[in-house]
Length: 368
Image (cartoon, rainbow, N blue to C red; front, side, top):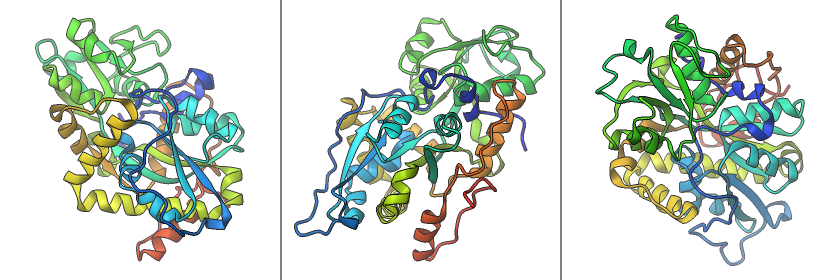
């Protein structure tokens, strides 16, 4: 296992639920209705008689499956007469709260808030039922101040939030190099500056930070401002894959409406296949939905490189989530969590088998 992948999710577990924010997110406004392109076909039958399923996601490229599936009506097509209702969120905690309250049934979310939500509820509120995206995290620096990895020492580097996925990744990368940083204050051989993704580009332009370990599209925004990619986190992982977005479901909803969950998962699998077959159309669809959800599309100089660095996947890459949890524990940011049962991949594997594809693995963390 490479050194730096200690990146993660579980770091969030050390923080109160309301304080946590998914680093890969933060673009867009609070929960609001989406505007799926495809409407319910006349005479379409409801699945199990259910009127609607409430789906949550973030208006961000790492949630490309949800953006494209909404825009192209691919979820609605699988749901028939059961309406797909969409809500958007800025951060993991608010989506977890919505899931707990029943305001959404299924959500696209990062690994840290998923782990945090599962642990805080003693394993009773959610399950991870599928993967969605991998990659899309980079260390971008001012090339005038930082020319090599060794030059990062003594510099000011931003991460999205204390204890978030990217913050832990960076702290562990620092530790692997033998440098010392106090995790809470961010002070030490490197100054770790916790900065909201929305203002990180301005902080970079002003010179208040020398670089940032951030997700897309923030990384590409920094590059557009003259920054240089010094390190792609994918290079630190086996096969260059690590989880950045999962699909979660409220446990009670899964138990009561398994056919609806399967329909959404079929929509996700077919959306990911469509993205792979139609990359240019998918990129345009994602950006169009991003504009509809957040009020602003990404310019080409940001959209194009950001899109290339993110891979959609049906596999939740469970082993990487487990590794990330271990890394967070070793970093001293949380007590060792019990993640057994966080996954229920049976519905996804049923969908995959029906499509003639092999099942995905839960790394020993699935329900029995």
